[in-house]
Structure formats: structure tokens, C-alpha cells
Amino acid sequence: GIQVEQSPPDLILQEGANSTLRCNFSDSVNNLQWFHQNPWGQLINLFYIPSGTKQNGRLSATTVATERYSLLYISSSQTTDSGVYFCAPPRKGDDKIIFGKGTRLHILP
Amino acid sequence: EAQVTQNPRYLITVTGKKLTVTCSQNMNHEYMSWYRQDPGLGLRQIYYSMNVEVTDKGDVPEGYKVSRKEKRNFPLILESPSPNQTSLYFCASSLLGRQPGNSPLHFGNGTRLTVT
Image 1 (cartoon, rainbow over the protein chains, first blue to last red):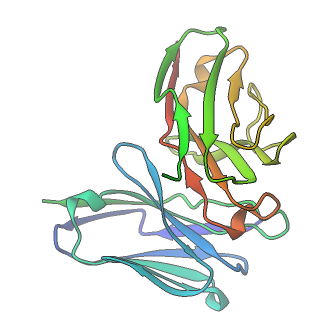
Image 2 (tube, each protein chain N blue to C red):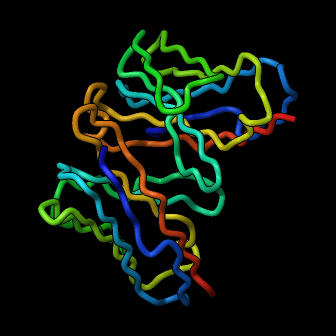
Image 3 (cartoon, rainbow over the protein chains, first blue to last red):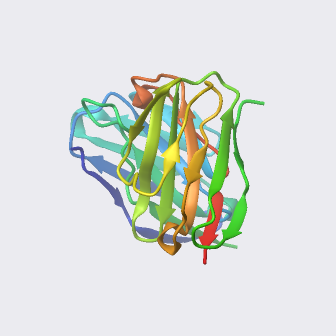
């Protein structure tokens, strides 16, 4: 099945900094989702991105399916951006959503 | 407001005492699923349902039961809970039953279960 690798595993930044989180996947996909798990445990869908780039405020995501990676950009980080970010492409065949192990982001005030 | 509602948020119980975690969605989604999240193991799928009266095992179904009698509800039942079922549980839904990865997946707020 599809393998999903996220990097870096951990990231500590000062408030106001920009960051780029990467998701590599081993198989071709026709879409990918990014989720944020906040410190209270809630899982929020950030992006459903078939291809190309999507933007939502300070966050944007780009998926390059042909090269099997996706990037999540966070600009002007805020402490509320802290948490774990998961990417999740669907597996071929049964379309089951496969989650990466996540990138833990800690924004310092 | 479109949402997935799980209850309860926190639950502490004892070994062997049957419990049910409820999940309801108001988006007319076909696909619903239960996950558990444990440190170091990530999100693992317990059961899923592609539509009413259709349920299937996920990766870690042992010790759990589900039912899908109505489109909006997908309860998770632990007939005889054990301490190794202590975990953070999430219910999720998406629009397309047979292609759950082809539409956004929405999660409930989670249920933190402790079994002593």
C-alpha cells in the first residue's frame, strides 16, 4: 500500500516565523488532505487538495502529484498554530485514507 | 452548522462494563468511520461504513462493534472494555461512501476513554 512520510517530525519556531511542512507519498494520488490536531486534541480538516495550490488565510498547500509530494506553508506563525499536522492521501483500490505520522509544530510566544 | 458530534468527550470506566460512544453527522454523508489514536501508533481505523446497513472492519476491529441503522448515526460499542482500549477515539465522515478519499473527511471532537 501507499507509504506516507512527513518531515520534519518536529519543528519549533518563534511566533511570526514562516514554515514549510512536507509530505512525500509512494504512489500516485488524485487528491490529498491536510489536517491540524490542536493541543486540545481536535482534528481539523485544513485542505482537501486534488492538485495545484489552495490558500486559506495564512495557510496554503501545494500538491505535485506527478512528483509525489505535498507542501503545507504556514506564514506569520501564531501560537494557535501549534499542534500536529497530518497529511492523508487515499490508497489506490479501496480509496482508504492513509495518515502520515505527522509533524509536531510548536510556536513559541 | 455542519458537524460530526461525538459523545461523551471523556469517559472513565471499569473493565468489563459495556459502553457506547455515539457519533452523529448532519451532512448527509454516506461514509462514516471510527479511529483510535495512541502515542507512537498514529491514527488507526477500527470500523467503517460506506452506507446504511453496510459496515466493514478496519485495521484494529477486535473488541469493538458498530452499527449503521440510520445514515446519520454510527455508534461504537465496547461490549467488554479492557485497559488496552484506553485511547483517544475519533468518529469521522465524508460524502462519498465508495470513494471516501475523494471528498473531505470531517472529524468529531474525540472521546478520551480510560478503562481501569
